[in-house]
Image 1 (spheres, rainbow, N blue to C red):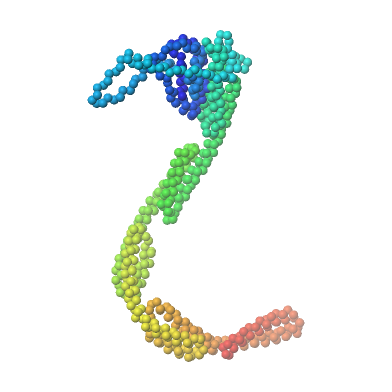
Image 2: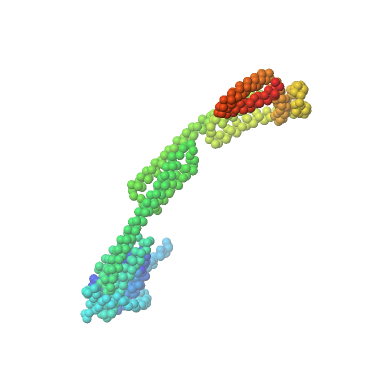
Length: 549
């Protein structure tokens, strides 16, 4: 709907004196998002191209516009009387673009055009039916047609409506009051709505107070003033609530921004050698996106706080980028050095790949492999290519060596059969009962073992362990016999027995003297000492028996 109210009274109709008090028709307007959309919607206008026959109109009220059907149904309360368009104004028909070869058609004459317009029917005007307003009880109309409103103990003239009945005049100005009251009610609802900001409510309240100050209406103005005062009080509370919510949101936003900065600083402070640069770089970009999202949609921080956090965040990002560039520059240098070292190792391995000196060359390849591990890594593609060359040379040598070894193993299988028979013969020596006979048999087997020659490589460890086990058993038996017949050990054992016996005899003599003198304490000590040395003597005598003394 339009903010303009179009009067249906022709401009040249015999009207009454207009009083400026008519403007308060818009006093009830409070601009809202819904009303603004409604006010911008186009209003279909009646066709004015046909001549309109003049008809006498009802007298307009002094101080107000003539109420019309359009006015009663508009959403925007403020009404501005516009000058009616001239009845003879004609719309300009849109002429289609002529074809290039067609002649331009002639324009119709004014007489022909007027006759066409006269043939069009005038649309009927629907009469307006107004509802009865209870606000009229706060006003009255005097004998001269002046309308008054009662405010407390006073009366105030609001206008006049000549040519209308007193009830019609009162109802007109009462409806003006109802519009303002409806705007106040809408403003109360918006005040209670948490989605409507205090700024919007404040703007609506200012508009309402302006319209109320200039209003020429009939109604309970004291109650309306009370409602406006309540709205003002609620607006103060709403502003305080919003301020507290903004402060809380700023505090939460500061904590979130601090978390972003702290994570960025932790990433930038990592050890370059331990840093996963790809994942860390992606995380840094994600943190920057979060920062931008907070700036666009989050609570606004105070400038000092935001600047301080941004400086830290920017420093962390710059430090990370500088570290990444330095790391990869150093990595490129070390990779180039590793590439040079490995190229030398590959050249040496390729030179050794055709050697037939199996033992020394095998050891040389082992040494090259140790150097390869210590050389570091080149780039993946270069490292893989160099390793493939190194491994090819190594495999060429060891494959040739394995072929020779396989031929030798086939040749040594007969030797294996001989040694396996010698092992069976050697097993008969165990357990050793006659040491001299066992040693003689073992010496014969050992001579045959050495004469048999080499065995296949896979059987060397097994056969050598088997013969060593038998040799160890015979040697242990020989060592045991030596220990039991060693004259030095036997002499030491006999000397200890002699000393212990002499000591025991001396203790026994002292014990007899202590007992005779009645020295109980000395008796107790000598008794314990005697028992201890007697135990040692028993062990020494047992050892002497073992050595055959």
